[in-house]
Length: 260
Image 1: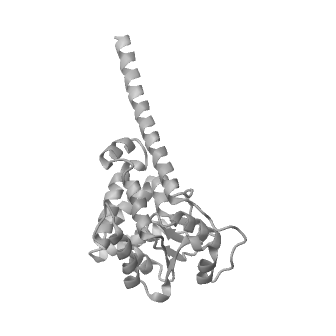
Image 2: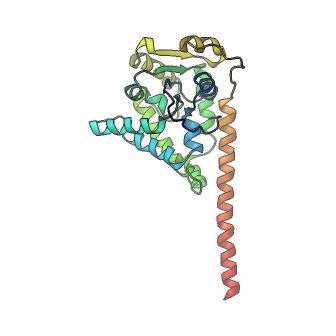
Image 3: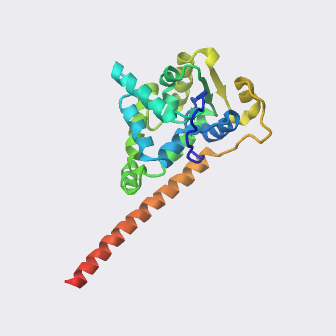
């Protein structure tokens, strides 16, 4: 998260599958790709939490059929990927980072780039997100908000995907991070896979994509700060909406009593 919601641009060629786990610099990476590829980038966290209900519901439908067990499941997966990513130059963040084989089947010419960071710092960062609030409370707080009323169920489906891929879904440990790297090396042809640390800036990324280095600083978006800020804003918005609902109910009751 950290970016604004992106809108598809008709005719845009899909070129990059961002395979980095959440909180590995995916927001900075997304903005860098937007500049380099001159097209919109689908950052999963941003689109799912700030986009329309169709975004989160379609990903939940895909994840509920993950892994695909039949020809029909596979067709559904490919159809959702094509629909959601049509008009985008790249996809980053979850749940796409756990759908690399499916994305490669859908977009065989795409390059897979995995953002990386210090594994122990990554675990600490993910743990901070998990302690923001309990999911039971979150479900109630977010219920008046669209599309966030579905967020807890989305997290459940995402945890199920991670458990299948890495052996654990929530909470995570170094096992998840290390297994993700191993899984990509096992899954993606070596000539189509790149590991990239956003601290290295433009040069390695531009070199791999065969593009000139832009005459602008490399984007520096703090994923952690952006997620924490958005989470607090959404929780406050949910509580405010509940206050308005209760206020309306109480006002209606008082008016009814007066009118009796």
